[in-house]
Length: 456
Image (cartoon, rainbow, N blue to C red):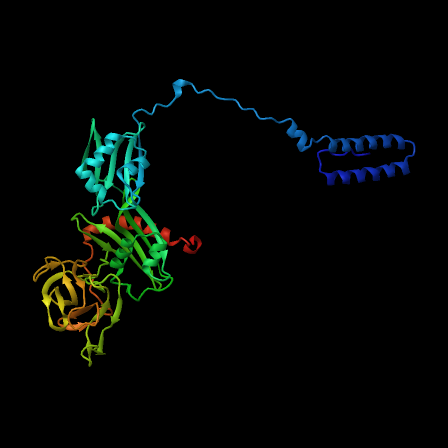
């Protein structure tokens, strides 16, 4: 029996079918000469159908000849036209070098002579406009007719206040008002390659958060020379924003720092008493009674030693403290809660502050250029308070801070001594703390699983 070709098959399949049909034809001719011409007729019809199948497909030119573009205008009913009367549009614009009142309003799209005259003639508005440096932003609210409804200027020296020019009736009024702020929580991770600030910059983390990290973990990690390439950290922190723009960074809510393979974790907790702090996952106060260093970041120019050649006295003597090289004016912080025992000039120390802590401990800060305002004997200070500024007074060859740590009058190396911890959480606070810590640490664990290399 002869098989008819499948016209839906591809060219290769059709060729195979044609060969099979011809082979069958040969068999019929050899076996049955009588019906040969009938079979030949069937084959001819089949082959003709194959040719016809290939010949009926239209060309691209033939298809295009049947195509044409039709453009039909659509009539918009007048009743559906949007009425913008009374609408206002908010726009942010940056001050450019050489800006005047007219150029700024023109760029914003204000067509309002009353607003222009007010900004030119109002003493308050002119005083604010003169202090706007290039790059600062102003926010405007303008109606559909181009009339100014409100213009908000940031106030220099204040991140929460703004100067607002507002339309009131037929005139304008200039007022100082608080910004409408909202808080956002961000989560970020980074890896140390060269320095802490280099890692935070690469991850888009503000410098203020890097400083907080150093303050939080400064009792356990030596941020001056203890960081290792490959150390990593994850941090959850708050940002304070106005209309979607960062105004300032807030507090770190939780963080993990992995230094030299060891993990350190901290969770912010504020009890009912209002005073908060950072604690480990089991409720221990992460804050030591003392910071390792009174400076946030600097280099150690001279370490603790029982025999060091003094560059000024030109003789060997013990160096019973740590010298930190830093520019004049760098903030010096109290390393622990305490009371000012001495503030003033003292021999080779130059200008010096001496603090007493918990009766047994004493810290000394020497070669200062000046003291914090209001600092005097008997003043109570808290850990992290700025008490003075780096200088080069007394026996100093250049600007640096000389820092000493004593226990019962005996000099100790502040970089190696085991520092006492601050008090832990009270038992009645643990249930509330555990609930908070569980949620925050779950976020830290989630960030810890991120492959930072894949994000580069």
